[in-house]
Image 1: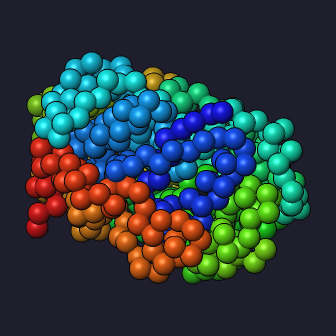
Image 2: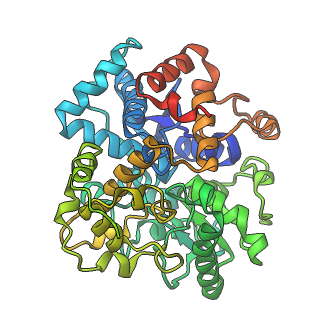
Length: 281
Length: 165
């Protein structure tokens, strides 16, 4: 049985606990064992903390990576931001010995050390590669008939030269995972357009971020989608939080929540009451 | 009249953006940039300004912070210029010289205070309990020693200076 260190991040546990809950349930049902990565901090966020001070970002990320290394486990994340941050940090530290040495001088001050071995994965990639679409189909007890919009976000697949998961301009793995539940992923324009929230844009220039989101929402509406299915709590927060004022009403679910639903999880278990755009199943 | 500053290239390189010199100004980045379609941010122009050493113009600009780091430009650049890394390097220099948005300072303060970038919300804490999760997530939030370690990393890397008023 596959076993991973479960990295929670910030937005899922502190804003959308149903994403955390459904990830735990879905992984259990699919034979993926999750061990809490205890004492982890924010990844730290690539668009903000890394942009403010790269040394802080790298050292704090290395601390998270070292916690998993000590447990002898590879990390799984449920957020594109955490994935991007930890994957990039792990990549840099595995390829640049001088950086690793510099970071270990800092970690030594807190009694830690990082050998540079931790591998980082995204929940959706683990489901597709390791579990497989067929096994997910077998576990579906409540087949769904929704038409949905698959939203990949940016840091799940890009930069593709180091991540190598799927074609970043025309991806399909999320669509395949979605369709395993019985739902139909609707084709639409500009499928890989950023939600607008990343890079500190949501915080500093929220109106610009909303313009990105609005284009996405219009394309999703035109496609006939009844739900937005994301793989990132930050994209999730952006779509969920700003669409009312933009005049849209398309409920948002994380992939883990959609699969949880198809396996019989209830609205209560998915903590849908935390969603700002009402989710009526 | 602007004065090019050749020393700036060294600063950018030290911050991790040395590959900016590889940009040959084709404009593929700007053509595909979703922010550029909605703001006055122009990736090609930023790369050229960085090459020329127009430090003061760059570090005080709003445009530097209008990139959502979506990596579309990086995917399409025919010279494989790691544009997002260069934007990050320029932002690091900008922050080090005191140009930081108040909203970003808020995010940085949350991280410095509790090790997470968003605050704890009582309603969500209760909801966590209701669905059978630990009310306090098993992160730095649940272990003071772990948070002390994160604080030490922040102090050792100069992050505490960023969050000071």
